[in-house]
Structures are given as C-alpha cells and as structure tokens.
Amino acid sequence: MPFTAIDHVQLAMPPGEEDKARKFYIGLLGLVEVPKPAELADLGGAWFESGPARIHLGVEANFRAAKKAHPAFLCQNYNGLVTSLRSAGVEVVDAGTLNDSPRCHIFDPFGNRIELVSA
Image (cartoon, rainbow, N blue to C red):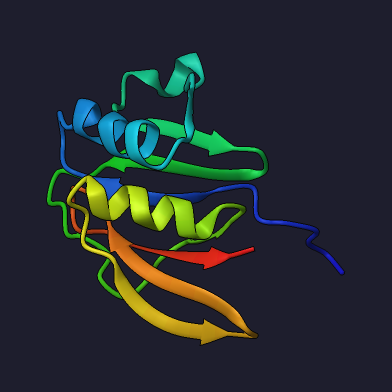
C-alpha cells in the first residue's frame, strides 16, 4: 500500500473572505486554525484541523464552489453538531445512512459541500 492516509483536503474560497471562513470552520464546526507556512502565508486562505482531519482553504480568483466534490468528516457528537448547526441557521440536508451511520450535507459560507458522518 503506497498510501496510509490523506494529509489534507483543500477547498477553494474567494479572495479576502478569511474571517468568514474562520467564523464557520472555527465558530460552528469547532476546528482549530493552524498557521500556514511562511512561504504560503501571502497567498491568503486558511488552514484548519481537528485531530487528523485537516482542511485547507485556498484563495481562487475565479472562485466556483464545489457542489458535488466534498470532504466527509467523521463526527464524535454527530447529533449535537447537527443540532448546533441548525440552531445557527446552517442548512443541514439529511443524506440517510451509509453503513448504518447517519450522515448529512452542509455547505460552507462559500457554497462548498461538506458531508458529516456519525462516527
């Protein structure tokens, strides 16, 4: 096996929207921002993680949201997170179950699709 894990997933975002990204990924999803390496910091965007789950948001001048392609996060407290997101006004779209695990789709403030799966 040449691969053991995915290091990170990158999604695109529009220029200058880092604060909006922080409000969503930190404030609503509970991820932690990690500093970008100095040689990449001037490119904009932001990097977030929670344990081994890492998501990088990179600035794209002609931004188009990923409507089909998406990361999927395993959630320890799936029901609590979904309830919290709904309370914050985030649209949560039920996606049924897969391997007996409830799952749903949400969209970040830029329209990128994210799947949440109960761990």
